[in-house]
Amino acid sequence: MEKAILLWHESYSVDIQAFDDQHKKLFEVINVVFAAVTSRKNPASRALLDVALSEMVEYMKLHFEAEERVMREHAFPEYDAHKKEHDDFARMVTDIKRRHDQESEAVTVELLKSLVTWLDTHLNGTDKRYTPYLSALNVK
Ligand SMILES: [Fe+2]
Ligand SMILES: [Fe+2]
Figure 1 (spheres, rainbow, N blue to C red):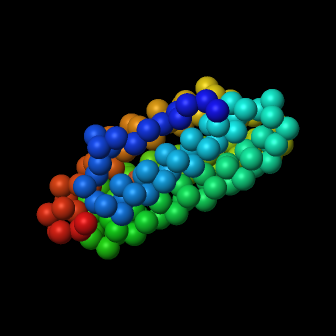
Figure 2: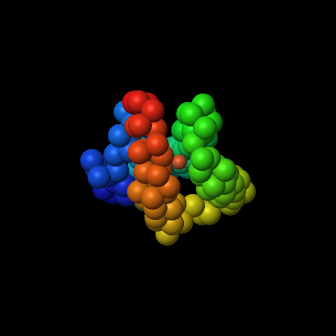
């Protein structure tokens, strides 16, 4: 198996345990997709990739909704901009899944790398912007 495409590190921490845990889980599901893509020669990999991609899309939505709920509950002023990033990305990921369903080679390592780049930028930039605000309100 190829090594992981994305590894969680303390530097990704947003200081909210539940969201750090969800980010870790998100990295895990992306790594499963990566492993399925890089083992395409394996006859079982198509089925693995089907499952892994569905899991990735579902988990991503679940995580985005969880963050959005907490931001709304605490009237985070940058909610709209944050939600827009989530919506754009969710659309992109759903589209990847749709293309995969139509064409077996649609998901490539390059495509996954662009997902990872987006996620890295979002976690280290946009997500961390809620940390001081929510920490001041004692959200853990
Ligand atoms: Fe986010
Ligand atoms: Fe996040």
